[in-house]
Length: 88
Image (cartoon, rainbow, N blue to C red; front, side):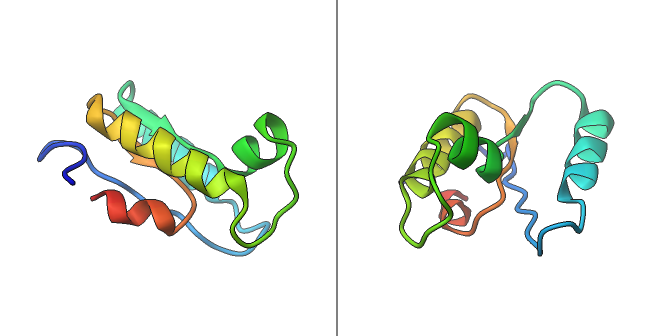
């Protein structure tokens, strides 16, 4: 299944809590402007789903869907988890 286009990119930032992935994501968004979708695992898991961090949580599938949708609509995507890497 093809997702996105030759012009879209999936950028995955991972790391331990507190290493400031958000600063890197903000710098990317400032550098590229509109067209960069920031798909935050913490936002989706904690605020949208109110889910605890657990293996196989519902947030993983929702992040995957949001990342794929964004790529298909021409956005560059910055999600924080590995399952969405299969999008590219």
